[in-house]
Length: 133
Image 1: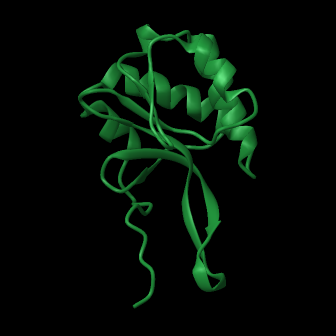
Image 2: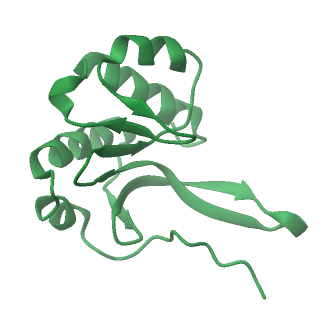
Image 3: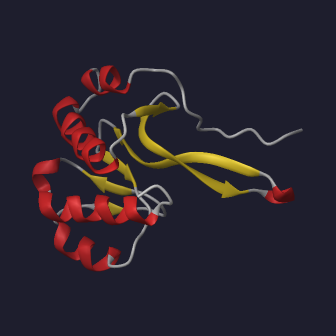
């Protein structure tokens, strides 16, 4: 059976999703930041992730998969950011403010809890780390 990615791009409207999300104001602000940095329009990945750009990754057998280059999900408990870790990641996180981290996610309860300038540094560095930035 061929590999089928769980999270794929859809044709859904990212701005409409954000407006109806549990965190519309923070989601709109984060979307505007990522839109400005990437120069791209948001694209939905699955039903709950707002993504920017496409990044390829290697699969077994020489095949390739595709996933969003960067993005976020405005969930009820927190904003979940999907960013590539770039040089200076840990140093920036130390200055960011209140947040949590997972294997490949950055969790922010609300944008007011973090330093907007440091968040922008993280997003810029992550975007540059992709082949698109």
